[in-house]
Each structure stands twice: as C-alpha cells, then as structure tokens.
Image (cartoon, rainbow, N blue to C red; front, side, top):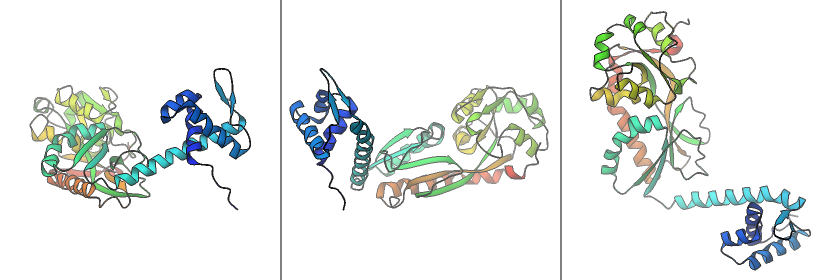
Length: 315
C-alpha cells in the first residue's frame, strides 16, 4: 500500500527553506509570514515522524533526513514547474521561441527574419543565439536549429540539405590567387567550430579534393564560423566556409567562390521540436518558412562539383 504524500504546501515550504537555509528568506520567497512557514515545516516533520531541520540560534541546518529529502523535493518541483510551463505553452499560438547557433543566426537567420515577421505579424518571435544544449521539455524553447550528425530520438526532426564547404574570399584576393595551386601562398583562415566533423572537412581535405597535397598549419583560427567569414570579408584571407555562412555576402558581392569544387559532409542542420508540437500554428509556420528559404538558394549547389568528404583519398 502506497503511503500518502504530505501536503504540497508543506513540501514547498521545506524546499524553499532547504535552498535558502533560512526560514525568513524562504517565507519571503513564498510570500508568507515566517510563522506560517515554520508551521508548515513543523507539520511536515510531524507527518514524517522526525525533524528535518536543526534550529540554531540564528540559523538552521538540515538533519540527515532533511539532506536526503532536499534533492528529491527540489527536482520534483523543477519537474512540476517544467510540466506546467510546457502545458501552458500549448495554449499559446502567438509566441515562438527559437534557438540556433550564433553563426547561423548572424549570417543566415537574422538577415531573413524581416520577411517572416512581415508574413506572420501575429507571431511574437523570440531568438536565443546559443550552442548550449537545451531541453525542449524543460526549457522555454519551442524550436531548436542545430548542426551535426543528429541524435534526435524522441524529437520531431527535419534534416535539411547536406552541407558543403568551398573557399571564399574578396574579389581582390581572388584576382591575386586565381588558381587552387596559388592558394598555397594565400593567407588561409581556419574555422575551428567544425573540428568535430569526421572525416575532417578542413583545408587539407579540400586541397586533396582538387588533387593537391598540401596541409597548411598557419593562418588565423576562429572558434565561430561567422567570425571566420567576417575575417574573409575584411580581406584578412581565404576562408573554407559552409554555404549558409557566406551566401549573403556572396550575393551582395563582398565575397566570391571562384573555385567550383566543394567538399560535402554528412552533417546537416536539423529543425527540431517536441514530438506532437510540430503542428502548433506558429511552429508549423516557422518550419515551412525555414525550409522554403533554404530551397530559394539551393540552385547554387548546381554551380559546384561537390565531393563527399568520405570519397576524398586520405593523405
């Protein structure tokens, strides 16, 4: 026979007091008097049959029973708060919170968001530019756009087109370095944000794809893809860049991609949301817009010979 849980108000009082280690601060958080909070904790201790706190002169300390109960109480309330917030979001058809990496946000999403906002003025779009791993059940996030190989079990996941990389540079540098062979003397920019790709999609791989054995070790290195592309725009050197990161700068003439060989990785961007949430109006609208925007520039791939990195001979 299951034992009945004590009243939720008493457990909440204990959780607050255990976090603050102060009855006064816990009472302030819960908007009750210290006497009322003390009464709730006393009733909880009577329900349990042993004390949860040692009352000191001007402080409190957890007993062994209190130390055992505190983590479970904190986790239980966190789960309850998360479930309540997720359930409330089901009623919200106007707010959409999206998280994407800083580079994709800066180079691809942000320049296009005006069009989405114009077509969907009823949606209050909020963005979080971060690579932090989010929990779509617990965090206040509706959609995540992530790049990688994908371990999306339990989520609604839409992979988009495979990613490829090619050298990009200013028109001035393109005139100075007109052939792949000449790039051996060019300042080459390295994007360390894709070091996790296997096989590696780096300068040695691209050079092998065009039949050149060259493994550059020098040149500026950036931990963010957008910073590497910005350096190329500034004329610092030649960046081996992913399509979404340079496509706007290329369309507006700041960068060119003169060598029509690209290397392709199996890693992709994916559109992620909770299973069952994909049909919520604001999520469905954003998904349709996101995929349509990608297709608008898909024809650029036809200009390149795209070599899967797995097919490039090893060094």
